[in-house]
Image 1 (cartoon, one colour):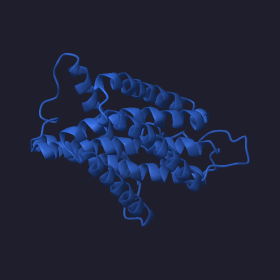
Image 2: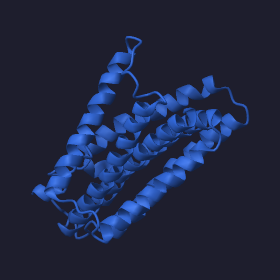
Image 3: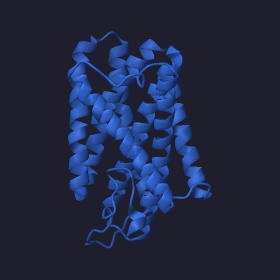
Amino acid sequence: MAFFESSNPTLKQNTFNLPVDSTELMTVSGTVRNTFLLLVMTVIPAMYTWYTLSIGANPATMMPLAWGGMIGALVLSFVTMFKKEWSPITAPLYALGEGLALGLISFYFDARFPGIAIQAIMLTFGVLFSMLMAYRFGWLRATERFRQVVMLATMGIMICYLINFVMSFFGASMPMIHEGGLIGIGFSMVVVIVASLNLILDFDFIERGAAAGAPKYMEWYGAFSLLVTIIWLYLEILRLLSKLNRK
């Protein structure tokens, strides 16, 4: 069904078209509860990494832990996408791994620009709440045209990041988009907007999945998918604020 399409790679057209072998079904409230739990599981290791660095730990000793968390989270994200029934286990593990990496990244940015991490956190949840209200009151609707535009924009951003990643192996990067000039700031603002609009698609997708009678474990999968977007949004806001501070 077309209304199950989303630009979030974890939420695709056939995600909820799964056999149900239990009387327990997915609910929106259950997905919200699991999203909160995953956020807590992300914050705890992030606070550990931050605290360890703040008391004078050598960053070099924390890098393997952070990289391990990041790589582990990446692997777990693909496992979760292909084995959705494993999401009650893989989604929490993904959150823990991402937390280790986010703690190091946030500490690095905050060391350069004191207070930037808390600003990014507040803005992220501010955007999340605003998008939720816009969705609930019908100010923004996940129409077919809306989905197509957001999907194309998201794909374009991912392609830019992929090209930049490949260029980094040759000691180069895409010009200006990572700098603190007007082009770099403008690029980050566009990415933040696109990430924010992905939340609308996620809300709509999860709500329709619950209405379609998806199995209970899909609450964890829906929460995992929403967490992916929230983390992306946080990192992009952090990057935007760092560019504004540099300018």
